[in-house]
Length: 317
Image (cartoon, rainbow, N blue to C red):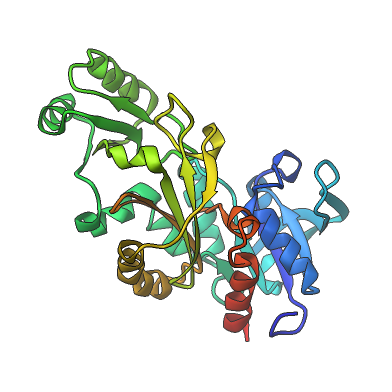
């Protein structure tokens, strides 16, 4: 059981009927909260509204069960005033678009009296592929641009490159373009049509064949890691696109990266974050809805859901 009396927890997340509970970190957090005797309320981002001074959400009482297919029960549908609740879990997946940004502005009105995890202003100011650029000395060579000439010059310099959207997730629209590949101009044109913002270009790191490591930090401290190995013939290692999770250890370099990031994560109220490391390089800092905690536990690692609730309860206490 936790450190505090029973709390009222509201969870802002994507439709619960669509999640795969076997790998879903939000579900692991909900299970642990329920086990500690906390009350759960579920709503989707579309059900959040500001009525005068009151931030309200329409949703239902939630109970969860660790059984595929019958993993949740909803009851007592109603409208609540979020300012009267203890904690809001901000757990919807990207795209990190204006709809997402708007929810952070709304939730900021109740935080920190109602503790929003992660801190909504920090989530807004730390998009995964943008905030990481503050630590560019830890990253592979990286370019953020919309200019086709910049991209051509970058490939000329590094030969083998990755092109990806700045606000995507789950490995969507991540392309590897090798030296001499004549598709580069067409790909840049496509990105211009699909995305209004600049995109990211990075040196391809062959170390990714051995895996893309997801390290989870709780309140700025490393809590566990899994390695995600790309499928044969696939550049991307995300589990959404067939990457295989395998157990892994934290290397001295991993710990050095965590030590650099940790104090800043803690200062910003980013209690649950996931960073991605390929070989010796940091590639992303995930603060919106990081995943991986069920996989870490499945491989005999820490119960990170419990560690996160300990950190939340400590803040509430």
